[in-house]
Amino acid sequence: MDPRLHALLVCGNGLVARRDILRAVPAWTIQTARRANRLIQLLPGVYGDAALIRRANSDLPTLARVERDVARRAVLAYVDGRGALSRLTALDVWGLRRQSPEEAVYLDVPQGSGLRDRPHLLVRRRSGFVVAPPQVVIRGGLPVTRLDRTLVDSWPLLSPVDRSSLLIRAVNDRMTTPRRLAAALAEVPRMPDRGALRGLLDRLAAGCRSPLEIWGHDHVFTGPGMPRFTRQARVRVGARTIYLDMFAEAERVNIELDGATSHGDPAETRDRPPPRRPARHHRHPRRPLHPPSPHRGRGSGPPRDSGHSRPPHHFMIMC
Image 1 (tube, helix red, strand yellow):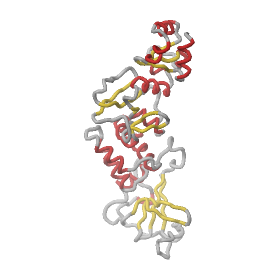
Image 2 (image 1 turned 180 degrees about the horizontal axis):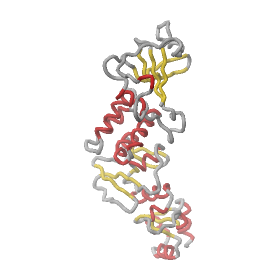
Image 3 (image 1 turned 90 degrees about the horizontal axis):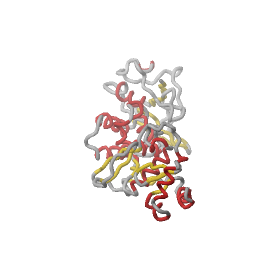
């Protein structure tokens, strides 16, 4: 390989654009390096060191045979500032979902950009899209669509199991809010399963913070005879701030909903609603709640600013 071409590859961490090559060496240098299997073309006008190939299957597109970060850098070099990583690729950059090697790179570009799909690259043209804040932010050195729009756009592409958990995790980790997600959804009037996403956002706005809480909201803690609950009630205890899942202030009852697997890695575990029936404490969900007898409940000190002399009764429902 020509030393000047090799220096360009080293400077670009294995990637180089054709325009940069032609500033340093003659055009025939590219063909010579490719015939010697030292240089590969990843996208039109974008070349890479052949040593970047990690997957030997020659039936795959070249872009799919390199590591994900290399493929993304190649795509961004190809669009040259005219697009941003989006949807499932952006979710990976945001750290919410790891993209599998089989999935293509997703890219959003403005309408009229002239860019189109390529093997292992899915391009979406958006009217009114501008590759600049607030629609695009830089994360890890890569331009990506903002998180709330990324989550909304990814909804139809995700499996039903992953959809809710990703949005709940983003809200719980304070990466976004139900209000921002609702505003992003308003930008997409037509979308598969839009009603399901709208329903989830309504429950997140109501204070539900896990699939089990959503299940309880829909099937157990509603209807005649149920007290008025405050979800995610904020309470100060000394220097600590805690949030009560479902606090009925008048009845002095707090119900904590928790999945048996919710204390592990959030990427691997999540609360899950019971498959057949509610937890044993609430086999008759329409029955009004009453404080338990002293030998069944376990109380704790009241919030300092509650003004009550009796501690609230606590239930822990785990499934």
